[in-house]
Length: 179
Image 1 (spheres, rainbow, N blue to C red):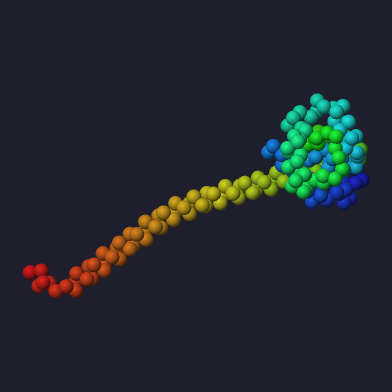
Image 2: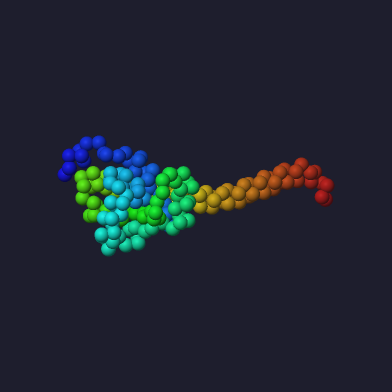
């Protein structure tokens, strides 16, 4: 166990979360953001990956399309300052986990553990959120069903009230009028 794991994390969880984006339905991190967190150059990170490409199938890592890259830049989450010769690579949670087998520095290992923990907490939050949505949907269905029942009950009550009022009116009419 490294000394650093007992101390304050190298980067904050909030910093990690700001570097997670959604592309093609995946939660991903850019190669440049990971390199920054691991305190290595993006070029060095990508070279390590290139030497170990078999470890990174497309559901672990993929290159952004021009359109995807433009969308990310336009969302103001990524600086368009400075240039890139190639489109960025992005890594899913599994790809980030696989990076730990490629990068062996103490910093990379510690940061990698932290990133995986953030991904896990995000997944747990989403799961809790989805469970809450399901419960609300069930409640909405129940309320909607009960709402129809309540409307029927009110209609019956109004009809009964009208019938009672009609009986009261009939009772006021002299009986000899119908004779």
